[in-house]
Length: 411
Image (cartoon, rainbow, N blue to C red; front, side, top):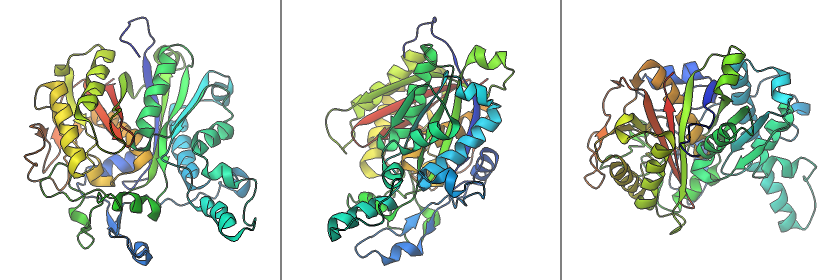
């Protein structure tokens, strides 16, 4: 996007959440204010030999009775989570079938991967040389575009489809690219967000990189983003959907506008697949400010990526300080929910919209002593803070060197 005034404005008219904090927006934000994390020691992880972390933050989603076999025959759990969050968002936005299906509504959605269990059906074929358990829906459940495609088919949209599979920026990239399509006049409405289902395999990915928390017997004390004693991340799951809509289109149909997405930028490091680059991360933030036509002084709060990894927190805070040139207020939602991977960018954005609406911003849990290696920022610690601001930023960074920054305005 560019900061041109000729571009259309992007309103948020609906939000839906399935998360460790709660399975709707109201309960999730209320649970956030309790100031207690959602991390648990998961006994199911004990059966994996060689796996060091036994921690998880789960959404405990129960499949609704309305999700019959016919409805979800091409959906794994990740798509069901996305469907539930999207149903909530559409209901709040008050969109009609005609508005969803008229060609001016698209879908931008992502996850780190598709559903994990169907992959084993293919792997068993390779191992046993027998085709068994593979059916017409197997690939459709595990394909990388599974959430976006299943949402489009379920709601019968005919507009653009943008599957985003960029690891931890899947949700935030979906929001940003969806907003671009609206601003450019390509679409009037976009269903945008991200989802992730929990899998022990995801824990193993970060475990092998020595990036998971090992405080297995003290789950309430971890993760601890930005803290000197942090020892790694905790894997979570869930889904979040935002209905993005052209501002005047929303007003014309009498929709309640929850907030406005006013800036977006994406950069890539081009240096390393897993090691973060503070310079290119900072560029994403400054480009988002330019896209919104704002000076850094206008941002009252930053929702940080805050994974609680040693290198990630340092690079992120250095990038943030470089972009703002001051100690901007910052905290991390992942200290509550763990790292929800493909869902985190959308989940953190939705909760930020609620913070802008209420004026209350959460502290980072388990943060008592900021790491001296992290940049000097105004870390929210101990208790929530009332901040009267019009604009706030949400940042996410992913494997592959994908950096995103979103700026939201209070309405």
